[in-house]
Image (cartoon, rainbow, N blue to C red; front, side, top):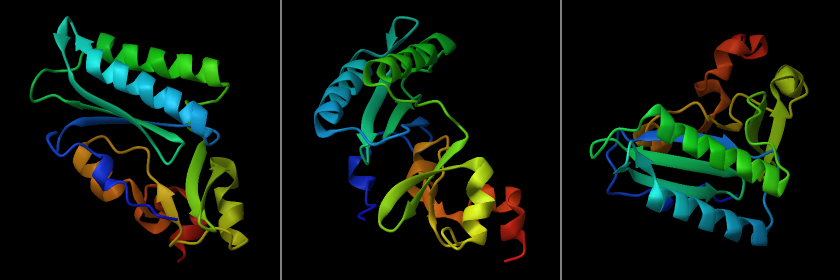
Length: 171
């Protein structure tokens, strides 16, 4: 699986630009992806914070992850403007019958595909050898463009999961 996504990230955004990642519980079909990408572009082009345009970006990655980015060096992002992005995500959930807000599902690259694993099952998957310390993990907790580029797709052993999963602490 080609995990090179760096070319999709705007180069003219500050490294400290704020990032939000939403993971779908399934991959979108091609026609859904086209519709969603249009929604995200329209949202980012019209994103405002207290009436001031936000230097924003929104895109669909790997057909399953929606990423918003706001370069706050130009103008800050208020709670209301963040809420507007969450409203868009909730509309996408409803319109496309997906779950984008389930923080208990975690994405890994297993057998060259993105696979979702419930947090409650991660230890079992490790014990069975389906996941290893080197399995690539989508760390959706990152907060900045710099982290997105360097720490979004990382081995499990370098993620916050390594501290939470007892099985890994012995490795």
